[in-house]
Amino acid sequence: MSQAATLAPYAWSLVLAGAVVVLSVVPLGAGRSKADFTMADMAAPRAMFDRLPAWGKRASWAHQNSFEAFTLHAPACLLCLIAGPTAPVAIAAAWLHPLLRLVYVGAYVGNVPPLRGMSWAAGLLCSGLLYVEGLKAVLAN
Image (cartoon, rainbow, N blue to C red; front, top):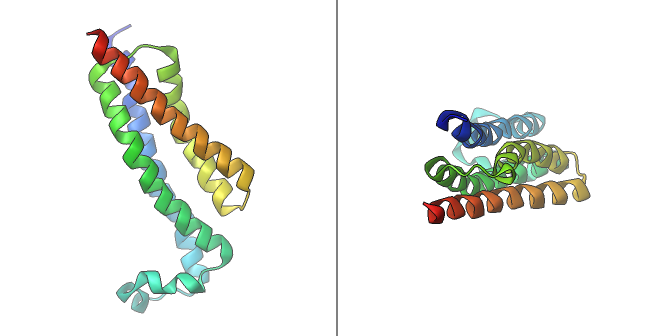
């Protein structure tokens, strides 16, 4: 397998995880629309939080958590891009993380706590596995 093919899952995971952060704005924007967002709210956008419907508040929290998850996942992807682990578990974790984060956002906005919790934990596990496999590859070289 070429080096590019070996590294592709980690690059795609990084790009797709970033896309999930961007896409998490969609339900938040819909919630703000339901709360009659106006340009005047730009002066204090957090002040309108109390006007959001319940699902809009959850969308806001899901969006904030998307940034937190990305800040943990991105360095793991970068480590794997540098070290190039070939373990199937690392490749699977790289592909699964963005999917699990999409499920997380949907479950959070849709108020499905068990699914939200499981997808959050599984996504965190994927990032952890990337750190472990990346470190193992660094130490093996």
